[in-house]
Image (cartoon, rainbow, N blue to C red; front, side, top):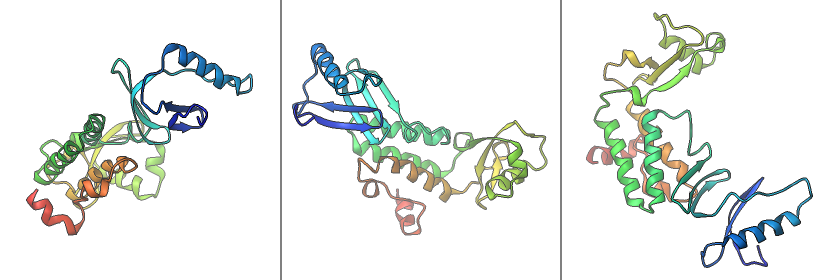
Amino acid sequence: MTQRNFVIVNGDTDSIMFCKPDQSTFSKEEQLTLLQEINNLLPDAIKFENDGVFSKVVCLKAKNYIMVDQKGKRKVKGSSLKSSTLEPALKQLLADLVECVMQDNHQDMVNVYHNTIRTIRDGIPDIKPWSKKMQLSPTTYNSTRANETKVIDAIQGTEYKSGDRIYVFITPEEKLCLTERYEGRYNIDAYLEKAFKTTKRFETILPVKEMFLNYSLKRNKKVLEKL
């Protein structure tokens, strides 16, 4: 990198991304030459491959990044950007924030966040997108941990059994309740905090604390009312 004066964009255990100082594109000939030079430095059993040239790369942290190839196709990698545990509404919030990042539109990120916050504040008509999917297992029934006992309490009086999937939301009493039992009451502060924590995935590249308020905190309640 020093010899070529390249800029290292990202690197982890088995890959490296770099670009020219002037951001100009690597020709196919340059790519082949560089790949050969890199592999000549490595033992015979270890060979790097060329994953391609990307017009834009956003790195949140190791193994968590968004890449756009020269045809505009986007590749997203990493648990921070593809969390399977997020509720659908928060997944959509994350996707919308990613889109703003890729467009370099930070003001829209704040607008997207505030739209989500207002939905939580004003009343969620359908709790399904805000519910967490869980699968019942023998551990669920045998554990004494609060996470599992809350689930057992939620399914009392139902025919759910081990192996079944359920959807639950957080009640004002900080308990779990089945989605099909939703009657318009939910823990507003819990979901406000979840929305804020979703924005924290970008704190390595953006001033998250300055851009997004945590509206679950008492000191921000007056701002929340006026939002």
